[in-house]
Image 1 (cartoon, rainbow, N blue to C red):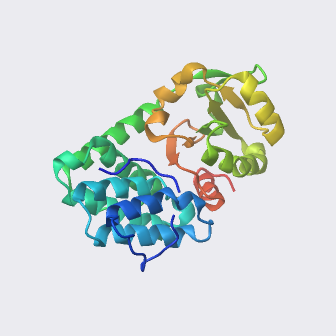
Image 2: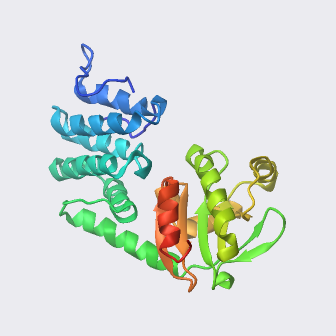
Length: 279
């Protein structure tokens, strides 16, 4: 079976051929591993090409699931909705066609996450997929009722429910996480733009104060950065199940209105905030 990892692309689009002695699945696996080295403007086309070839080339059904799953970890809305739809279609078809021994609950959960939180379509009709959807619905219900009290890096305590009347974005992140660091400027920009309208960002990390303080100072992050000892709050939110960065948007009544996986574009952030009355 192929590795369930992602990482780096032998640049080659539809005309790419597997080297002698290398299967089509192995060649695609290497391309996915190399995607991170592709310039941003070339990534959407490369991802779409790989998605199509996973669907159309002769590949072991189990390897097709693994490849499609890996590709989901390389694509988000920053590559465009059409690109993400190609990836979702590929994983959906792979799960539909594979035997039960070649697919697991986490494959279905990843598909359900993208469909639910990135608003992508799937035609997959499968009891295991339905179970994954039900799990996410239960997770969001629990997150909607969640509360926590954490201390920020300056010693101030913050309680989620006490912020009723404000729009709150709870963002789970870490200094060692490249996508988390990538989204910091956009988060800081929307915080500066909307804070006077009652917008609060609570950045939550389970890292030590000695790590967070200099990082926050260097990056000039103005919104509160809270310390989550042992990652207990992150566990309660099931953030680790999806992976960071992950954000949860609460309206002024304290209702969870959106869960955001991966790294949203600025336009997506503005769309979400506009939906809760911030303009």
